[in-house]
Image 1 (cartoon, rainbow, N blue to C red):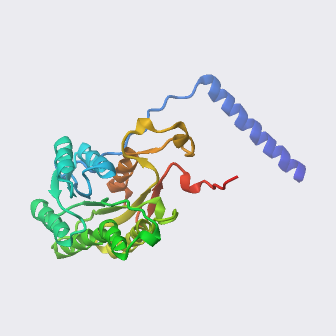
Image 2: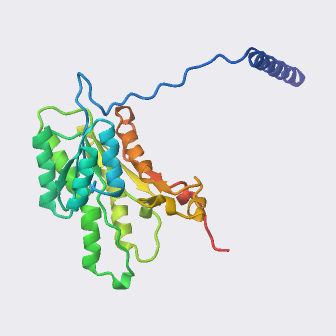
Image 3: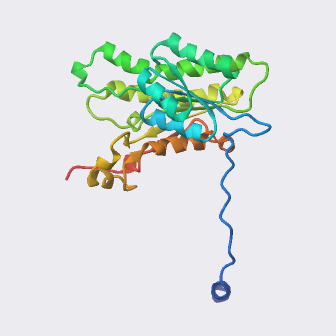
Length: 291
């Protein structure tokens, strides 16, 4: 019986091989390239374009996100405390600029309510605003620690809370909503003197999966993105070794984060919820010991 089994397996192998050889000689039938997913962010005759609010959108990653959604034909508003950069980004992108310091609860809530009055609601909330501040723990005051959390973590709750209250007050319940919080790989890895920053990003990581559950009945998904090294300017001045240390062979660019935001906000991707997506060229998977 064993011999018969081996013979049958060999015959099947030979048949598959002959079929493959025949198809190779005849030439494979040409297939058309897969069609790209429709842009569900843009409006059409029956559906308005998505309404997007980005915090800290004047520069860096935030600016790239603002431009990406504007290029996708969305209605975009962003806030920032930098008036000069904010006005310039608004001019370049066509987005609406709202001057506000995200650490100011009243100012940030005012931005949200202004958009509710202007648009009726929002569809996408991207909490991007943040500050990078590092100092030895012995030289970091409690006030310094609180200040970092007031910019990096607290506003994420303020905006999400305001949106949840607004949605809850509406007669109808929209079937679409997205929250994307910009986290950092420092939520799971650190260096000396990063207590405030690490704590704020760890808080965003945990707050995100809590929001995913709390906002489920409002049809709002919540995810976060953890960038690694994303070079915000002078990319061409990076050294070869800067790129080479990354398993992906390069340092990250602003557009790497913006593209993931667009992906998560496509209507078809509502099954991604409560997740953290790391975009770091593979660095957090790289084991490094000094030799």
